[in-house]
Length: 262
Ligand SMILES: N[C@@H](CCC(=O)N[C@@H](CS)C(=O)NCC(=O)O)C(=O)O
Image (cartoon, rainbow, N blue to C red; front, side, top):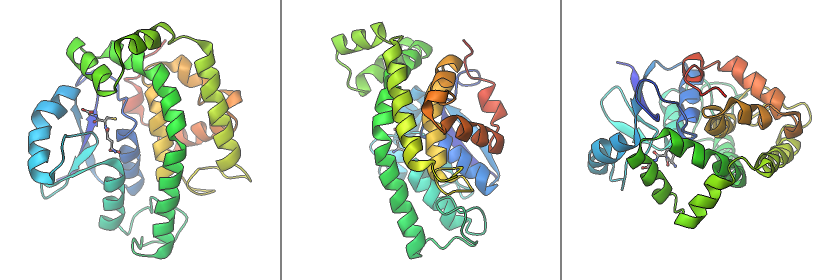
């Protein structure tokens, strides 16, 4: 039986795949070449169907996407936990954190542990970018959700009434795009230098690249124009070339077919 990847969408069957945490796991499964199927879930499915199940099984407070169902019916939740589980369970396939290293993956080696630490450091560095992307993504994702899920989203992200009103009113402010371009440009200068084609290693993409694809998906799923202006724009430095390389490696045709066009 294939692994099941529970991926969050705005509407099962037709809505966009927007989740920045789910995409990295999808790419990790593809990189590993593991047989998997997608189970689409909406916010209410997580809250009302899966939270009781995973709270009991895993002791978590609430179910969040992504989680996977393994062949034995057990679940693993949280994108990094799933990536580490994949490397441990399928050591003879692609190394997600040290993609240039020889196989099998040795998850106990110092090199591997250091690579995971580098990933965690980089992930922290990406928090500013996520916050900037959220300013454009927030109003747009809420407009795609049903009213109840939209209110849940605004509340769970801690927006006060006036703050949310202001965010909606300023969602087309060009300075927001420029801020993201500047941040991407800086990240590219720091991490895509000296001929490096990818963030995780010079020649092969890995989990850091997959996380970046996840961040780009927050915009790409909701606005082709915003994606063009940020991740594909010349002002974002080497990210435009990186984005092309990632598309070539992972075309994700079924996912991208659901993206909104503007
Ligand atoms: N650290 C977790 C974060 C997962 C997460 O927050 N997922 C969001 C979707 S991107 C979610 O499921 N939210 C549901 C909710 O807050 O009710 C991971 O990396 O998987």
